[in-house]
Length: 347
Image 1 (cartoon, rainbow, N blue to C red):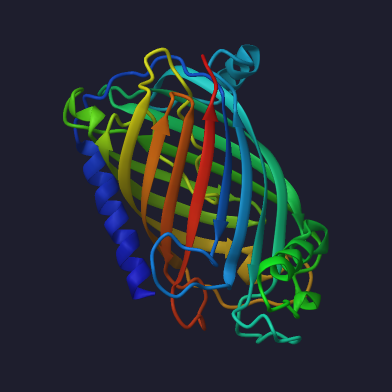
Image 2 (cartoon, rainbow, N blue to C red):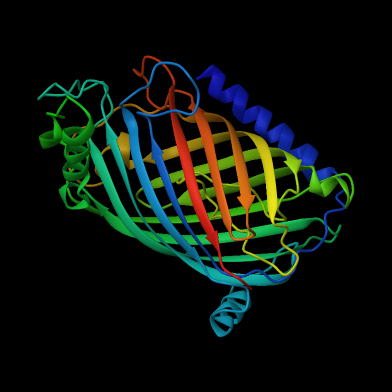
């Protein structure tokens, strides 16, 4: 808990420093639509070392983000409804997501899982998000995102089906404890996030930037607040706000533009702290008795990654995620990798 609390306090400091810094990043031009596939798994890792197969064990997400000029009537209506606090919007778009997450305990061979270990659970969902970009009063580029996801938890999420199929295909162990997974329950998750892009000058924006962000989740799936910051360094950095993992409170941005460069490559590091009031995958079902564990109130992530854009329309990225303990009896931290492939259509 101390480690995750220190990460959370470090994120607060990084966020404050970013909020008071000056930025010379330019306002981006209109962007085209994008489609991405993100795969996250703890059984493979971009870094050497022992691999895991536990806790948050698998995530798959498909995301489509419309271009700035698509669905203009809908985005105009949403902009009129949602207040634009401390931002002058210059572009907005909507997008759609579909995904599945799976969670499992450490020992998959137990028919009666350890009650102190994370319960089996699946989460199948679809949703939509509204995103707008613009400038603050100090001419700092900013992105704001609101997402609403609806889905199902329990056997209907097909978590058991997918994990057993995966293990029967590439692994020798068949998970035995899915009879004790969370019960059927509809899920609602509302996400909000705001990100700022900071860099010393318009020229340095091609090579370095700093992106603090704040956000949160509400709903019966997760109630949490997030603070984080990303540092990127490389060649021809895209004029966007970084690459999220599946459960980030914000969705990706960065479609093809008229001035998109044909090639870019960059590395990045990220720190994020979360204060967690409720997590259904740890606390258990909302209105029914079932498996649950005592969660940690503060969780921290330390991430490193590499991204590459080529031929103007394609982007590949990989990220290693280190996550502090999420529940009281968890013996040590978790780690997993996130891989994303994105296609950026012409504006």
